[in-house]
Image 1: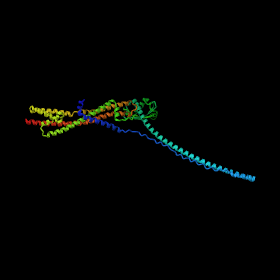
Image 2: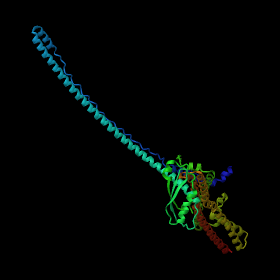
Image 3: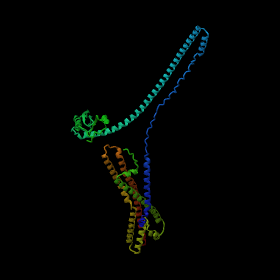
Image 4: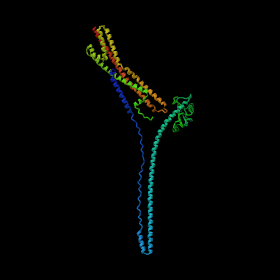
Length: 266
Length: 230
């Protein structure tokens, strides 16, 4: 063991240098690598929830009007009675009648005035109430509209993302369909490089082909017919059962696809 | 692909398959060892160059007697650290004086001297080129080894892809990334080795040329001495 180390004598420094250099490199790589990729935190948008606060007017209830004094003329009556006892019956009656009339008139007048007052108050109160209700209704409508707008925007965004996902999914299924057509295609002798035609397929969710038509011809009838025939020969596309129905309705019920054998590596 | 795993280089290496890990280990060791060689050899050659420059200037300028010079070097010769041109000189002079004492004819003496110097020269050349073959091997092979690790890793990652119904980039990307680490390591080991190899071989060639020239000059000198006397 000792011999080994002394024999290694001339190598000691090189080994130390080399190992240190590599350790340094490992450390740098580790740090540099981590630093190159800062943790990317997704900032979630913070929705500002706006709610409209209506400041309700402190309903100023009109103060009750001071009640008109209901002074019954008692004194007059007492005096009348005294006079009755003293004065003649005629005079007494007259006076009494007069007083009575007076009182009745006064009472009626009073009543009328009170009525009018009350009506006016009521009208005022009704009007205020109506106005308040109107304001509340407008505010509520506005808030509803705003909420609807936000919800609409959110829904739009969600829809866009979903559409993109659906598009990708649809693409993979289209590739599947193209592959199956390719397998059933037999190349007519007159087919040339670069020919392509556009087919419209009508599919049902089981994958069965309901109808196939050539939408745009390649210019070569035999080629078009061979493409159409290939689709008919497939008859029913395998592997389409598991397409989500909304994607199917959107993309596959009416599927237009370009039949381009060059894409199919032929 | 919900896992947003940290793609640090260590996790990449740790997740690689066993073979790729072995390849990476080999390459790392090759890099370490080749750097050991580079440092050692660099120091050795630097010292040899310095020694030769000093020896050359001293030998031809100073008027000391050859036998005196030979005796001066005895101490270091006993320690076994005679290098380069000094070694050539000592071997030649030793043989020369030994043969001359036997008083053979001059041609035989010169022949023996030249042979001894040739042997010493060959020893020196061997020492100068000692680790170069290893560096050359690392330089030429380690990129291929790294490439092999990469190809293996990518092969595996594509085989995994075949089982996935819906192929996305995210399913293959980590595999390819970890496979490419092997190539990077291969290049990392190879590049310094190539540079060092080129430099060391040119320096060693130059030094050997110097030694040869010195040997020729020394031979001429001895020859002149021998025939002068005779």
